[in-house]
Image (cartoon, rainbow, N blue to C red; front, side, top):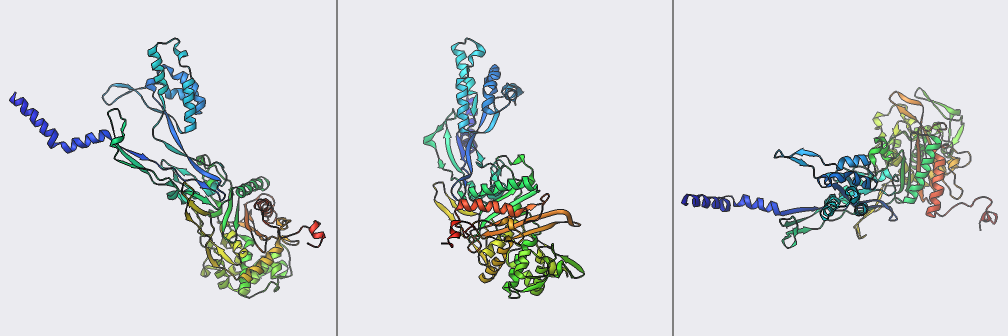
Amino acid sequence: MLISFSFLGYRLVDLQVLRHGELSNTARDNTVRTIVREPRRGDILDVRGNLMATSLFVKTICADPGMIGSYGPHLARALAPCLELDEALLLGKLEPKLFKGAEGQMRTNRYVVLKRKVTREKWEEIRDVLEKVDLGEVKGNFSRKQRQMIRGVRRAIFADGMEDQLRVYPGRRMASHILGFVGGADHDGKEGIESVLDSKLTGTRGWRVTETNSKGHEVVSLRHQDVAARNGLNARLTIDSRVQHIVETELNKAMIKYRPQGVTAVVVRPSTGEIIAMANRPDFDPNRPGDFPAGHRRNRAVTDIAEPGSTFKAVTVAAALNERQVSLRTVFDCERGSFSYGGRRLHDHHPYHRLSVKEIITKSSNIGSAKVALRLGSPKLYHYIRQFGFGERTRISLPGEVRGTVHRLNKWNKLSITRVPMGHEVAATPIQMVMMASAIANKGKLMRPMLLRQLEDERGQVVVKYHPEAVRQTVTPDTARKVTEALKTVVQSGGTATRAALEYYTVAGKTGTAQKAGRGGYIPGKYYSAFVGFFPADRPALCIYVALDEPAGEYYGGLTAAPVFKAISERAASYLGIKPDLVPQGSIASRSGGR
């Protein structure tokens, strides 16, 4: 007995003294629980507060096949429509399966996932179906014990206690390249605004440290910590969903009519740099991005570069006017359509003789723009190209933006001074082109493209406010006014973009048609067609850039991109209530002398 009590005493000392710390931690781990509380990802709104992206808390629907037994076929038949699953597939998941446990004993699987990302409303619907389904018909007449078993079978279909989030884009494909999408277990932003503002939208996790009893139920009085999750901020963009819809509708029509490889359009407020619409085709649905090729998810407005062609002539003329090397009335001999320089010939699409600087813009003369640049000189031309933002990122709040291509002056060859002025040997993104035109419309002031207006908390209180940001003054206001005067003639009779003219607004714009370049030189029959313009020309409200990549059939910018510009402009101006600056011929006002 003494020996027995000695061993017992030793064991007590071992448990209570020597191993006290280890066993206390084990006991604590059995009862103390740390519950992570996930924050809700913030919404993305348009400028008017319309929902563009939101998050829903969802559940994972699970089952305990061990409790279901022979009721599987009946439950599968009842639940398959609700879960939107094939009945045979669902039945396969509900059937009990035997497996060997850690102790070598045969066991039945007690947990199987039926469907993930099920909304709370859908879960309520599933519960209603489970309550209404008559499991008794499987067994016929049944006893009280059997009724209890049937209730257990209903409880065998349950929702996992861990709630997840489902990112939803109500507009489906609308503004997909701006919004981007989320992915991965943590719902990280993968593209677009979702990626740029990921840390702001995600929020901060909360937690609860508490103790449970032997049945696993929380003992509230023993709750140690309870920190609420802080939901993510909501992002309000400068995008107007209605204008975005207008742009995307017209791009869809352009894809059908001109059958290009792709098409891009950007709509900007010149005075602030606010982007109110940006769209590309082809596009994708951010609700299911994996269903689309990677190329469809590329935001061509910031990632794709192309030679701008004749739209670049506005930069050449602006530079020469600003340096007072020419005026709009300065005349150049355009050599009747063929000009030899540096041992190579430069051609115009029509044999022009003598053209003023204004007419060089009107007719889009390659030879005229080359001679303007020769008078200006390579260093000055290069300086103004960089002044207008080419060769550097615009710092738009979107991932993947590229710089474009502007070769350093020491890399220019003897032909560059005649090729660069007409948009060759340089490459630019659509966002760079629209910001260049916006700078001319904005009295020479280049603005940073603005996509974010403000960040708000869940109560709608503004946390961060973004403001328009001027980059630099590219040319003087007087020079910008003169360039605008020349650009007005492009859409008038005799210009290259009469199809861009608007009935109620004066348009200033420029066409561009560039042959696409490849590794071995220019590719025959492959063109990049564009038009950029703003209106009303003397007090611009909108600047719009439209580009088509490899249109089929007609390929000139004035025949393809210009009509798309016109369609977008007319609908956007009507929706935004932009005040007209023209009185159509034949109207009452024009017949009464404009009174």
